Image 1 (cartoon, helix red, strand yellow):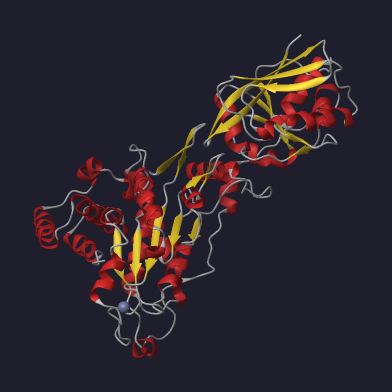
Image 2: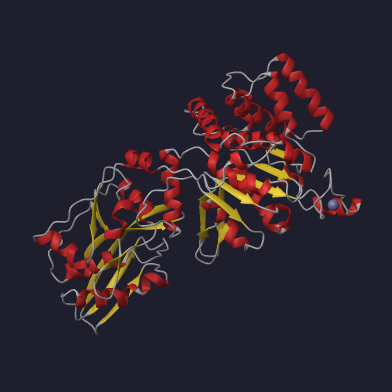
Length: 506
Ligand SMILES: [Zn+2]
């Protein structure tokens, strides 16, 4: 007799339903798994064998054949242990009823206890879409699984508990009120606060605009200008995650194994600071079993590249497409997967190799050609994808002395950012986007209309500075965000004039 148990596997951040079929043949005792399993799935043989015996059940004496269908999807991970064990126990006549609306996920220890696995949120979400109503998961994954609403989650501590559920000891379902959870756990990181940054009004305003509209921003300034500190302060003015964003992000952290068992839902926008010595795979994503890289871990948050110009040119060039598309495709010989990466790029760099070009107190010691070679490391097409480019000059000793008291606290700036985000979310309700940074050329025409005077101003500026088509659009998007921060329905000339200031020559 062939028995069946339902489970799932992830491809990228999506999941597919998998049927585990088990048959026992009259042959030498053995267990084999077919249907494109990776090495972790193959190792299930040993774990399942010991777990069944050590849970007090009898392992079949013949040859056990496990088929994972459909065979053309590659299966990876350790969550197949439980459905395989369930299939085998059914073969042995243990009372686990056949059911098309129940699935099993979990890794088994040799003693039969269930261990937490990665990717439970996308797995359960995928199963629900396939019409599954009940899912058994390791107890430690239960809260994460219960983030999927409208499905029964049973958190089991062991294989024996799953069997007992069908005999006389039912497991209680785990429930999480996701809206309430998000509200109660939304946290803001005030480790670095703008109130501690003296002066730098223009740079701070630019960062506020970036946070409000989700725009990419690059700061160029001498060592000691405070650009790195300001970049760190960015985390304190980011708006809270919307539920849809939180779930997307949680899926990413779940498959990456970065989710803590105590905090099943990501409630804070990510802020990922990446060093230029990080490997391209670590930044973009990849490996023989593709894993999300930093750009995906920064999804819906900030990717901070300090000393941006020191990053290897190939890495910077590879960033271009994901910045444009908001997703990255990682191809390997065996498969290609797509990960979302809609992040805000925050870059910082020195203006020249010695760092003091344009400084009011220190002399730059670089030659013209050194400066040119240095800047050429950032290509035009990459710079074209950065909405705001600003100079952050170092304050002189006199300016530092004369700036008294605390600056505006992050909390206040954040209030304006949140308001502006709400205006955008409402305006783009039917467009499937959340921020001005996501506007396409076509949508810019629709949402960034200028009056006659402003159109003329932009035309003149465009000719004067030789703005590329892309840059022209970027100015309009920035002007839209500035207008939103001012709670103005229309883009006014003053908003456009301000937007045109954020295009320092680099
Ligand atoms: Zn220099």
